[in-house]
Image (cartoon, rainbow over all chains, first blue to last red; front, side, top):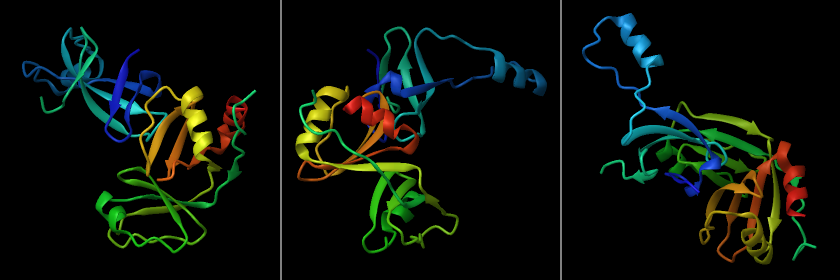
Length: 81
Length: 132
C-alpha cells in the first residue's frame, strides 16, 4: 500500500487523499500568453522520476500540501532534499 | 460481538475558526471550552461561548454544528485502534485525524488514553454501525 505523509496528520494510506496532479512547468520557449495558458492547463509532462505534486488530505485535516515523489518507485522524498 | 461497548454520538455545539496560526496559538479561549486544532490555521472550539481571536483581524469565526462526538474510554480507544485504524495511533495528548473504519474521523486523545471521537454529523450513524 502507498502511504503518504501529511504535514499535519502524519503518515496515512493513500486512500485518505485526493491526488492534485503535478506542478505544471511551462517551458520558457513558449512565449505567447495564450499558448502558455494552454500548456499550463492541458499539457501533462508525465515525468518518470522525481515530481512535485499536490495532495489533499480529504479524510484528515482537509488541507492541500506539496509533496515530492519519485514516480518510478512511489517513494516520497523530503521537500528540501 | 464487539470487545467493548461501541461509542454513542451526540451532536456538538461549537465554533469553527479559520485564522493565522500564531493568532490561534495565542488566542484566549473562553473558560470551559475545548479546542480541537484541526490544522495550523483551523480550530474547532467546542462550547457555547463565542471565542475571539484578537491576533488576527481577518479571522473567520462561525458557528459549527456539523460535528458529533462521543467520549471513549482508553479500553475503547485500544479496541478501535486494533480493529478499525490502519495507521499508527500516536500517544496523547494530541489530535489524530484520518479514517476510522473507513470513515473520516478525529480522535482527541487525552493523556490517560481516553479520547473524544469526532465525526461529521452526516457520517455518525455510519461510523456507529461500523464500530458496533
